[in-house]
Image (cartoon, one colour):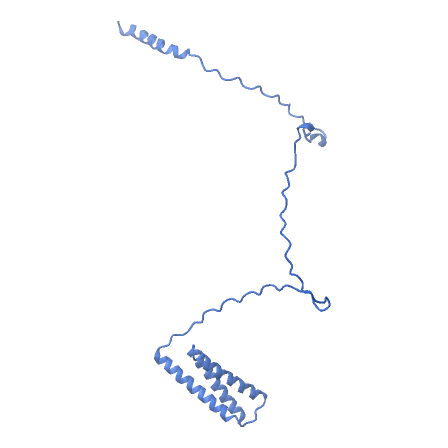
Length: 194
């Protein structure tokens, strides 16, 4: 066979092979549901009241609208009352329950200065000197008559001395300041009396 005769033969064989595949039956799809009729678009109204759409009418049988069931409210029980003591009504006043007293916040920790042994010794010596000087001044003022302002100074000096002795146990810095105040006030008081 020549090349020109072979081409149509090959083409015929290829068509014969694929021809049954082309003639197979296509799967049948279910028919499409009929399309509902659509109302034609409303024509433009001349009157604005005609332009409002009219709601569809629903027959009463199809309305099955019920409100949701109400849940019962939970009411707390009434507060218990204390029995009243048997006393005449005229003598007792209506009792008012006191609100709980709030607790004060805990005190903040005190910051203390850390002193070397030499500093502690120097502070204690200074405290002793100021306390001794203030007490000497108070002893010198014992026989004098003092006015109201001077007596106030005298009481303040005594308070500073007591506070200095108390603070000496835990805070030397504060004790030194209090003793120094007592000594200075005592000197001022002695000058005002003379």
